[in-house]
Length: 94
Image 1 (cartoon, rainbow, N blue to C red):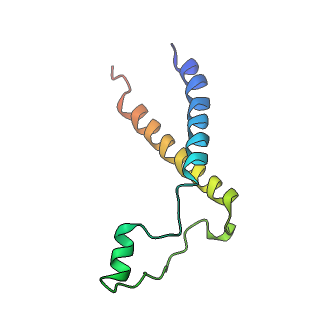
Image 2 (image 1 turned 180 degrees about the vertical axis):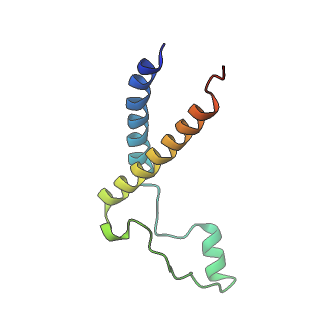
């Protein structure tokens, strides 16, 4: 398989995996504290930290669509970085 064939199959596969992963994981985020956070807040008297940095996507607002967009964007960025790193380190030296 040559490089063009590989790219022809890899890019759509990356996109499908990204979209499916983002849609599945978007429901995993919760506003309710987990057990560790709950123990810190109630027993240790630690207050919930105030957010000083809203994030680079804060101008988009809130909602499921924004969460899916930012999730897909992040996953694609990580996959492309990984692919680029793999490509750079696996080139043939002659």
